[in-house]
Amino acid sequence: MPAIDSEAIAQAEYEDASRTLFVRFTSGEWYAYLEVPPLTFQRLLAAESKGRFFQEAVRDRYGFVKLDRR
Image 1 (tube, rainbow, N blue to C red):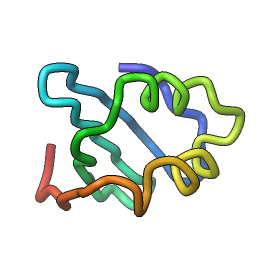
Image 2: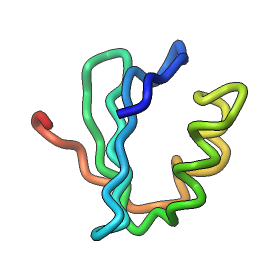
Image 3: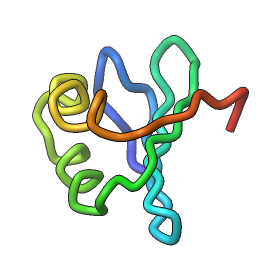
């Protein structure tokens, strides 16, 4: 899994089969964002500010579930 250099996001993973973006925040909480296009994950990894990109392109745009743990 790619290293994430961000003050807000500690880890991000993507599952192609389900189009699910898994995000672990620096607080330790995991969330699964549903029906996220693969290009959005690629753009997250390439973004200069991962946190800003997440706020603008993922949060409030996709359904999500909070996970107990991953």
